[in-house]
Image (cartoon, rainbow, N blue to C red):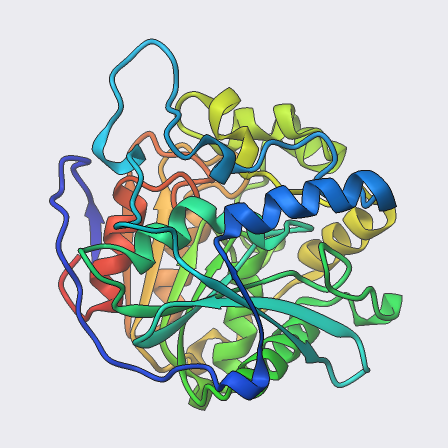
Length: 344
């Protein structure tokens, strides 16, 4: 089913009960993602970690909004009383690499998979919206750093493949004590999520594929300007093709690795991705969410995914760009309702 959504779509309060990450599997830090980022900025200034140098983390703008207009409801602080408490833990990949992840909330677990060479901080808005859709948290949200980014280890160069990134997800779920989770993947993260649903279907309850593709060879190419922006690593250039409005404000969500070698490995992994022949084996409920104005993954990529996955629903939001979920708004509301088993 193809639907075009009106952005005036209403909020709803989700509910659900799920599993808590065992205390023994965590290094608890009583902090929000924003608190972590502020500490990380200080640490990075000493050890020159490239990923967030010069970046303003979104939690530092919790009450900020784009200039020149009133604050919209989806941009207001979404935490109730206090920010969510994110618990830090480290999993170990099957090649020995460290995989840093963070968990907040209780309830049905959902793991968020970021895009190409992007750290977990890119989920700041979407994670809190999914975690605090109502007055209390009803989900357990997991975010993590891809290998080679943020606090995760690099590993060897031959491990940079979307199918192998999916094995990293299994290691994180195992370490967190989660047998089955909702899986949300954005951009390259959606390519990784495809392989998780194909190779480990027993670990996936519901699948959400956002602004993604079965493979670059199976749809219209991205525009030359979008391709150049993505390869540049320049957050200002990338923001202009990512976000629907006020890219200069949402730019703080682009926590991209500053290491050109890592960016190159992620870029090549994403470009080599091709899951088209195996998508028929994705059996669980699947939402395909796409922006009608996406220059990085034109909308025909979403239509092909919808055609190849049996139990899939496609929602195209007119005028939305590649960051449709990262920027909150209708994208986050659509995903929240789908994860609750409601019509979108």
